[in-house]
Image (cartoon, rainbow, N blue to C red; front, side, top):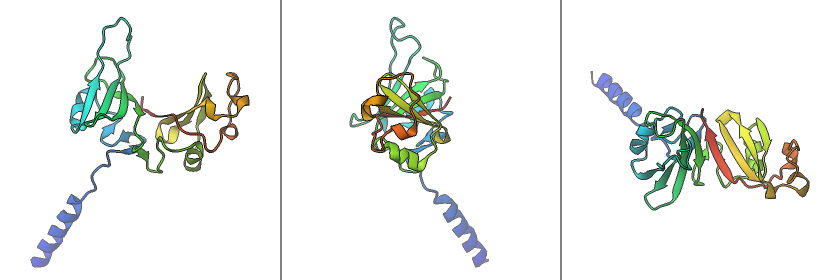
Length: 183
């Protein structure tokens, strides 16, 4: 009987020792406790130790854009969230812009990473040529990384029609923006 109780106790102990979720972990469908199905109304509960700032403006200039900023209590901006519907507490988070370098993928990609770090760890799904930047999409983790065109060679900076290839982006090109796109 003692052995059975010991085994049951050990089993309960092992199952109760789950690792807590790293709040800075970036994965395909979540960032810390924030998931692709999180509703706006749940943000205060998820970011209980942080400040959730919702911009609510009149419709004179804002249109449908309704970003929600997450700040640490000390004032450092962590995330910029875009819900699927403006001013709807049941809307899910559609896009997350990562503003703090502590947020990392399981392969250690963060705002401090370079283009080489991305290509060494993920398969590039597409590269979009914009006016002042290129956007590298990685479908594997629902992420996009923006690199300023100032990081590119001169012949790739000004031609908007140019199909930019991986080989045209220097290995040491720095990430300007890191976003997760969920919907």
